[in-house]
Length: 236
Image 1 (cartoon, rainbow, N blue to C red):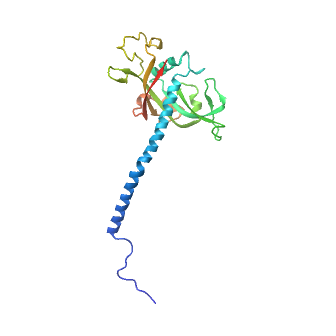
Image 2: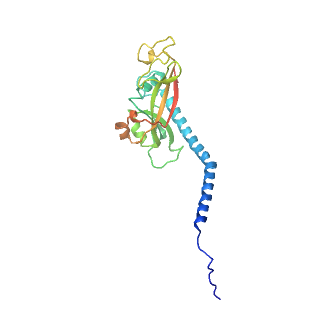
Image 3: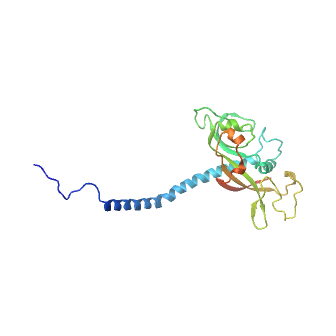
């Protein structure tokens, strides 16, 4: 027996049905984003905050750490911080993580870079944060064991203008509270009258992590959009 197809039957959807289906999907998608969108953004923010905390802590700690064989003639951590803050406009500070060999410790207390292609984290190598000046002799080798991005920080002293703390002149350290009765007679750490140097640290992502780029082309003055900014301080 053969059945004839009804003349009222049809294949597919009408234009009206298609429009209704798209509308329903749009409503569902909007509801999904409203519920899960903020949570996803919160996760991204949490990761960014963790990275920012790690970078800021590494910088603040390094500024006052005297390292054998690498800190020149500095006699105190405060003296080192004073000079690094003052000179950061001309001598960029590089902040990054690299794989270090725990079995090979340098004179300055950091690890030799682990450059093998295989290895077990925590046994063969340890990922450690470090802050280096561009002229550091360890920089080139450590970049070969780089983990993640390289950041640079622009440091500017904070001074009190009578109402609030504001950024001073880049490359200068002055008396931050000139109206409190003490004076800064010279341009060195011995004449600095306060016990604390407050400063703004602007962190930038270096666009090219190669040693050649950092040495010859990195210009901190050309970096205008910091990843984040932290107000920090070092104490005598």
